[in-house]
Length: 181
Image (tube, rainbow, N blue to C red; front, top):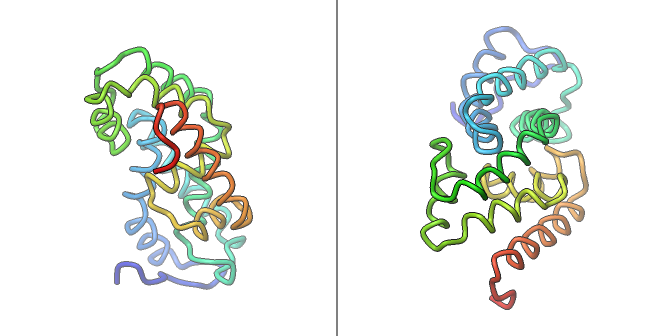
């Protein structure tokens, strides 16, 4: 039953909401942990579902699947913790090879650090405007399509494309990569 919509009525029965939680909590947790670290991921992932339960009447299946809606809630919670996130990227830039948490983001950063790029990557991510960082990380960490990112953040498809393009260019520039490839 993985991937199927759990229930579509405005108010989900408790069992349906529990199934929704069971299906999506791990990916929400991993996304938040990748953005802010595991120390706050439990709380923010749980808060995502508390908000979803409270606002379940506002979810409109006609506007898209429930997964991007949940990631939109999680992304807004991450934005509320943006200062901590920016500080974390700056700290990563200073600490070099020190491992902060076992997350996808840190595995990527550890791989990049083998190339000596970790501080520049962390600085580049910290320097991105929130909207560009959100789009880039939803694409990279949650592997969302442009449509899913647009739904999650409540922005247009075209805005997703332009923010993603700008973010990628800024990161490439910060890393000193050739923009032709």
